[in-house]
Length: 474
Image 1: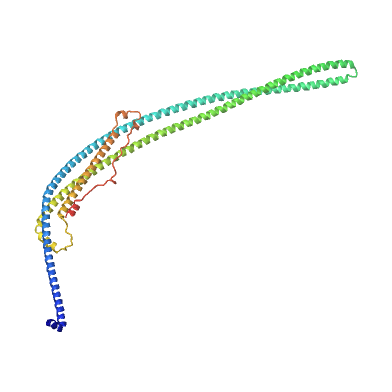
Image 2 (image 1 turned 180 degrees about the horizontal axis):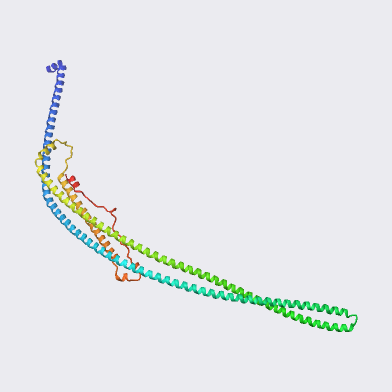
């Protein structure tokens, strides 16, 4: 109780002290906790750094061990691949050399055969020209003979027709002259008889009028007798007139017949003239046809000659193309050989660089460790970079091998196509004696060979440069 009273007497002071003590104690505890945390973080950082150093060293050791093992295994495989590739290159080189030799021999044979065929063709052309000249001479001689025969025949017929027409014209002129003379004589006779009858009638009439007054009966009787006589005379005159009229009609009919004959002769003459004109036209048409046939024959010979020249030029061009293709194939082979040599040199350089890297990496391990300690913790460390380089090299070599295989296939296909073209060219240029001696040997020309190779524009070659592979590997 007295303690409480004592406290109650100095209660304010003790409470402040207690609060100060509690505050100091809390501050001390906080400082201790901060110190512990700092110590713990330092310890953890130190431990983490040690672990990182250990992991880096272990990773380097693992990488070095894996790299040495992989180097040992892959070196043997790469050496084997290099030997196999060199052997394949040598075999391909030998095969391509043999192909080039065969192509050269085939080209020489083709040139020899082409020269022989050209010689045969020129001989055949000369023989054909001689035959054509002979045929033209024979046709020209036949044409001249036929023309001379026709002209002589037409001239003789013309002379005969002219002589016959002149004879008929002279006969007609004589007949017309005689008919006219007879007609004139008949008309004169008719006029004379008529005038005599009129004069006798007038004289009798006058006598009768004079004698009427003397003797009527005697006059009447005499008159009757005279009338009878006059009637008889008139009858005779009328009969003569009828005869003259009939004769005149006959002469008119004769003149009509003569005119008809003259017209027929004129028609015959006009027909003969038409026939002569038609024969002249036919002769001109025959001349034109012969000229056209001769021109057509000349055109055909020129055309065939031009075709043969074009075929020969095309064959020469194809031979030149074949030589160019063979040269390009030889250049490609040389490029492939040079590329193989470069690959071998690159492989040797890679081996030397790997050996140098092995010698250089051992003293540089400490420097690499220090450099890795200085790098940031968040930076990613590449996992097995040597393995990545080795796989990259392996992929590059595999791609190069595939490219070489593809190039070998392309070269073999081109070789087959060249052989096919050469065979077609030889088949086209070989001509037998039977075809040369045939009737249409000039037309027995084979078709020029055409290449069936695909165009180089659409072809793709996979080419991997060795320098690029070295850069990627380093």
